[in-house]
Length: 83
Image (cartoon, rainbow, N blue to C red; front, side, top):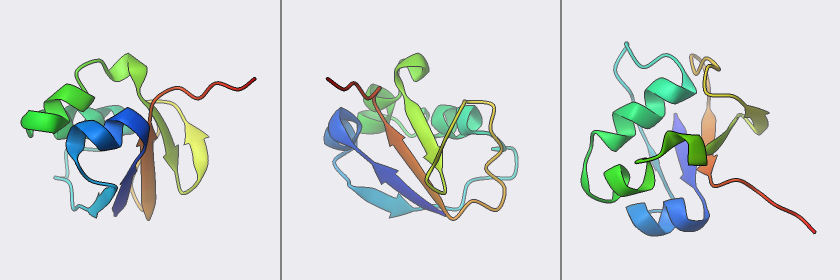
């Protein structure tokens, strides 16, 4: 699956995105964020507070308990505000 990172998530990690193949026990967005945080470095920094991360699976906004099986693209980003 393709991961896309935006705003300070991208800046912390140092990548716009990457292709990953997470382990079988990574089943939800929350699992994915926890798995990424365990990579250490910029990942640990970006995902230190999972409550600050929003996600979209195949361009649809989702909650942390959303399944990722079969997803082609997951975007991870900070909360979006408008005005």
